[in-house]
Image 1: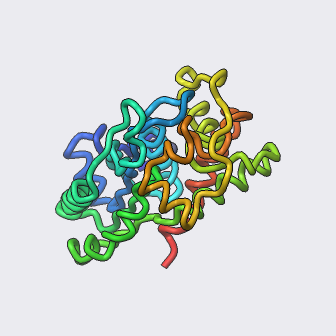
Image 2: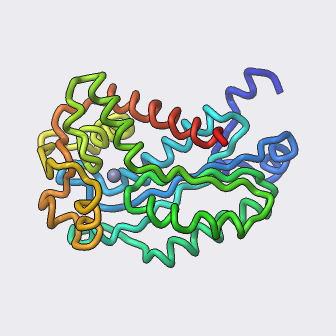
Image 3: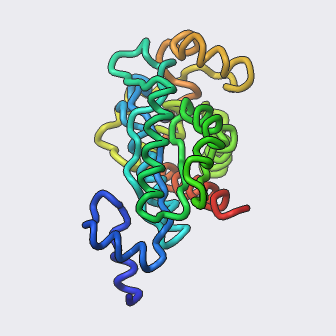
Length: 256
Ligand SMILES: [Zn+2]
């Protein structure tokens, strides 16, 4: 394959023909990456598919950094019970999510993928993935299954990125904030209502606050559905945030 052809190689599994996938597997393209997103409220200004769409962008960027890697379809609905007070949010029970991820990974292993890397692009999926990972690894012996389950690391990467680019790092709260709004401005600017971007819950989401959020629902902390502050977002920052996080995640997958 010439370098030009490699550049043009389609890497989304669902867009490829089956014989082409077989050829790629035979040529050592035996790593698959996929994201677990969400379709849930993202404040008054962002569309519901924020995390699902971001997951696909992230998985594509991670795959390009790893090389010889195919991107399998994003699981678009996630564990979003804590967003159900807001119209339109969809959720899976944890058991449904676990069953989906298990069957999905088994399918990839069946076709000869030797490494399966999972990227949660929605906060509510990190915990369930972390918990189920040992069982998932046992399910497909001989396949290296990894999941990036460092939610605080994700937020930290965003905060550092936004701080360097604009000095507004303190506006990163992790949900429908300046970071996610910037990412959506990069992906689909026509779907963002910047005139409705506003501040939300301002304190850090960790420890007991995170527990409360999951137990009682996000609306209890943030009636407008925003954790952090959405003001000041730009598409340029979104471009950088996707690349920064993709690099961080790719390094994690390629580590021990
Ligand atoms: Zn989100």
